[in-house]
Length: 400
Image 1 (cartoon, rainbow, N blue to C red):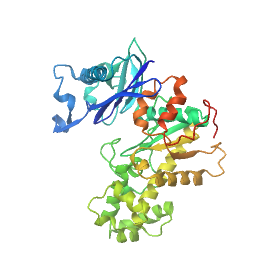
Image 2: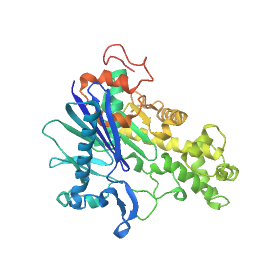
Image 3: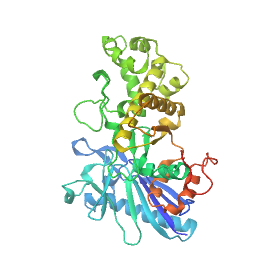
Image 4: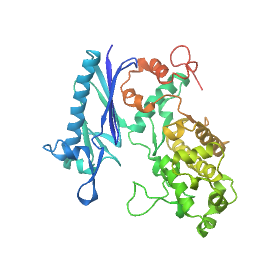
């Protein structure tokens, strides 16, 4: 049976995974990302990363691809020692940034990919070359959200007969992103402006230099949830709270933002992070935490509706840490979507939002880009082991 090679390139790690065509994992290992920060700085306040310190004899624009190639060779040699021979029939790559093919190269550009490694040959569309296409087997690449969405769509197609292009995967973790199978350009929902957000709650964002923004990621993501809590607590006893309260409480149903901040227990917690806020909200132990979580749910719901209208979606699965650790939050997002779109003449059938039904979309994402359709049912069963009764008997006949 042919084998598949998966590569997941992030800002801190570089994962390789070898799998049989039927979805059985054969060997996997994690290495440092070429973009792993060393903690030092370069000129003009640039952060130093791993490939600044190695392969220095290679021109800068070639270092990232060289590092990835050398690491892949190392992985394959280690895999051969562990499991014996294998026959790679395809390679899928999940990459941390916008991804495209240019002059036979796979190129990326993103927030965690320093542009000083971009090639001068790509002045019309600058990006960092991470690998080349191959002649011996197909290489397919996508940004990490699209790769995870592709894995999820295999399950939706098999279990419910849904066209993959009508599905999306929402990343709700440290950041906030979206992937749609077959979509060349990632839907940057994290940078959709939140129109009702008062300027007092705007935050700095990687998409813009020089001033804060009302980007959705600043309120829906784990980072945004924590920052929102810190900002609101910093405004205690400030008249600003009374000014912004009418705008915000209208979104959640609370009567006074000032009272929520004054009575909040979060400020007494030694670490104000997303987990702290969501734990208080989950148990209804702090009204400010409930307010912040509800605000995050509304921002996420509005983004889901916007993307559904743009791309004709009928199903959105939500994954990553904020959602996985708080399934009640995913349920709240789904309720808000249903409330906003009730009796819609445009979203027919109704948009359904839920916690993603598959385990670890990030791990399966790269491999799913090169899985043959004949193996979809087998892969769906492996990706959703907690739902053994959900798949229909026989391939791809379910409807939902």
